[in-house]
Length: 280
Image 1: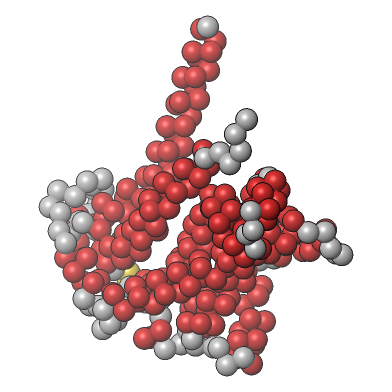
Image 2 (image 1 turned 180 degrees about the vertical axis):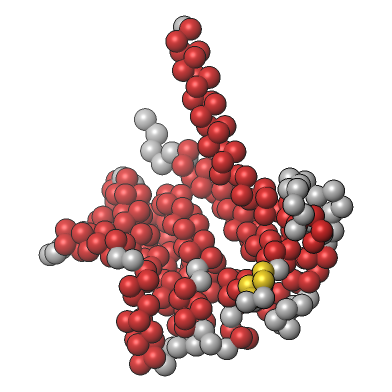
């Protein structure tokens, strides 16, 4: 009993330590966003702002450095992220259903290719994708950037959803077919609700990837009116110095939609994980 208690205390202590190490940079970012410049550049660090201010947030929201409102970049990022989530989720679910439910030639090869694709560094694909987008006349467009993000989200989503589709009993689909439901109705009424937890998990990955990505967006988008929020964040870095107050304020605003998206889909993910499809 004593050894179990000591083990539990050690595990809890380790968990708290990991949480503190992981959460401290986020805490410092939010805290710095509310600090005036005197406290930010003070030789004595202040974990909590003594004189909190919203000046940095006002500077960012009103486009104080780039001359363009924050909401313009927000709409661009939101359009790209939502489009990536919807299209990649649908295509990944269709591909996962085909892989899990049907036996076809080169099926194993296809699954191996999905794993190999995820091992390729994204930086190595910048030049080839730049050339491909230029040939397709999708360069310097949000649709072209969305196509790139969809390509990165599909392998992960297909591989992950494959396990969820395979876990759905075939008897449910057979029962629906006996009741007169066609393949499309069975897909949307039977399979889709049961695979929803995996679909939510892949959507979180796709949303974070499309929302935070910088390298491809900075390379493929040239016009300022088509820039996304990560590109806007680069405007606060300059040769003469970095404006850390607006940088932290913009980073805080950049993080909020991801947290909001996770909170919205969290309940659906948890409820779907504990829901049972077959009794007995």
